[in-house]
Image (tube, rainbow, N blue to C red):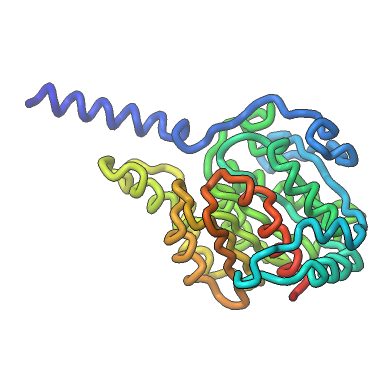
Length: 297
């Protein structure tokens, strides 16, 4: 029995020591912007408060034609964000007259080149975008952690606010998966123009219990990302986007966070979409809902 207990203790210690390898999955080499459809992207960099240099792309906005914006019109008239192609086009036109800038807080895997389709789609609707990589991702130095990602997020918004072509009062936070925890934390500290959360969760503790029910997650978890506690302190327009069949962050978790948030808020549930499906990266339904949300429609 003593040997069994010792083996269990050693196993738990190993999991505790290596838990961030179960949370963060950084990809190194970043594709060239032109090779992922962002020939107009400006490579930039900025430094965090603790001295970590982060690579990024600033994707400027552009104007679009009705035919281009119609490509992203939503087809299902019964969904909460549904509208015709013409309304998506008029929303896009309104946005182009008062440019917004979206800063994207990535999920736990990959790097900024994998979010290029999102930036390209938003650009077509007159929305500028900053894609950047956290510490340890995309060839950046350092190792990811909750506190480290919080420093990275602050540095990204500080950089945007310093640009003469960006209105600091019109910066939108877009969090994806794990990045929703980064975006929610920053929004609780610095109010954005609007907050968009794709596949959000109440806390990493809840998510850990869901995926590892046999582990004492409460006692082991170092990074918590307590979104549920923080979302109650945020006072800005909120759009939650979730997949109906999300197997990584269940829809019920996203709905729980949405229920705790203050108005004004909207939720879009994409039928049949799993966590890593194209519909939740830059799908037409999602882009159309984002454009209408940011236009105030």
